[in-house]
Image (tube, rainbow, N blue to C red):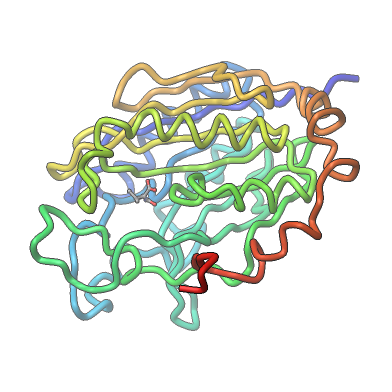
Length: 310
Ligand code: CDV
């Protein structure tokens, strides 16, 4: 029996500062219903989907930013997503800022099954940007001020008839993210993102944002024999233009669906999870061909050491 998961990548256009959570949820409900009408098993929303990308502003006293975080999931504002998921019989994955009861702040994605029940929670591992206010920037990317990195790492869960993993935005640029999930037999990785097109530390990368986005997800998919679902919050949000180009990538590395707009848009693909085995059972038969004894420094060393010891 084939194992087909029909997945929807529910790209969102901008969520402006004065848009409420209810505004965002209303848009997501619309996308979810469209996904259900296209027979999706699962619909994936972007990183920090409920609010604007608030790390673009710096506030010294982080408690003044508490209103951007969710202290419960579901909450009265987000419950309609869980209720509609159960009513329609469709799972979903949602990115949000999480403030835990003991005061920890994470950039989080939740995976919910077709009955509206939480399966898993993933907290972002690679936190990009800066810790302190950098007033010379045209806009901030202070994720390192607002979020602590996950201590749990990359999990893989039995869900939707296969093995599903999650990562968030900057995680997709790091080969280790995919490999840690690949070594747990992942078959589909779900990834929301907010990627400003202007990369302040090196603007020469601006024109390459779309290329780099595809490059990392296509190579990660191929090298680990997995489906990858990348979902943007794109368009001009509070004056900052962000990459759209949401895509669904096959284990072959081929893009099978890609968003055309920079706004709310659903793209779908029927993903044969058994296709993963064509890669993980041949070229990338990890057990047969990997040489972990040669890769020790990947797990033991953080930065670069040069051959001359500098
Ligand atoms: N939200 C993100 O993690 N954004 C980052 C930064 C570096 C733009 C990204 O990798 O796309």
